[in-house]
Length: 104
Image (tube, rainbow, N blue to C red; front, top):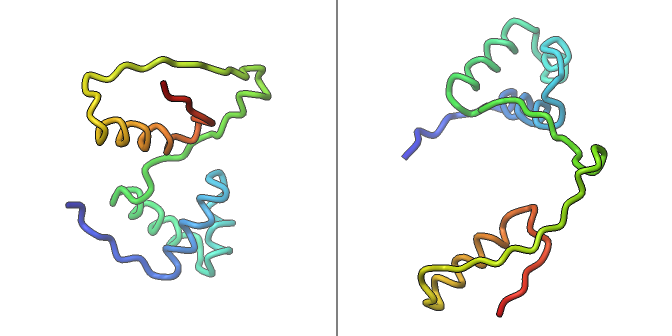
């Protein structure tokens, strides 16, 4: 089990602000968190080192690039047990990119 990291209100504010805008400068982040830039940078690096912040990502809009795709997939499972089918449907249903399903 992973070690639970203790976060104070400043750490939580930093994380919330970075979730909203991962490209925010350290100076702006520090101002929003109510601390100066050097301790803000130390906190961010500590959160990165602890694995709380795993990375910074770009959210690419495929539609803006003309990559609108609709896929119909037929899936076969090795087990047809009702619990296995339900587990699979739940797992796939939790994926953001799955908009609907049909069963046969």
